[in-house]
Image (cartoon, rainbow, N blue to C red; front, side):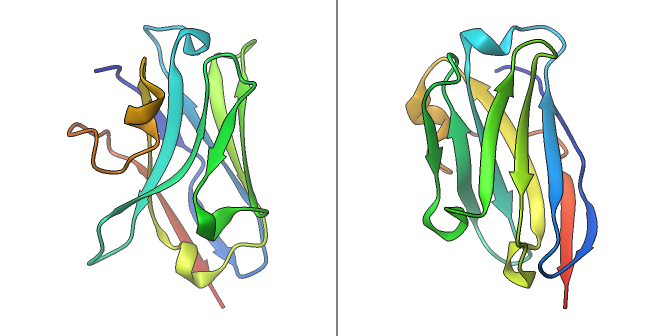
Length: 124
């Protein structure tokens, strides 16, 4: 499985914004599909968003549609997740994953290996 590194998490007030980044040192993201997932304390992992290797197709979980935007930056070989209008229920550890199969990065149960993730905490 592709080794990735997440960054950009932090503490933010409700209504605020954060941008998460997913980087991979050994692969070119344009050849992979990349997805973001999150896991809140005591809850299962949840699909957040995904982008195809071409960058042309994007997918979003229902709870983040209209607030989050995923984008592939081919020049920097990173995938960003712009999160706007954050809510306390967005609080979670966020993980990214890369795979040749789009199905693997749009399902929270399709993968079994994860990185350290990055913590996002939204307070009122």
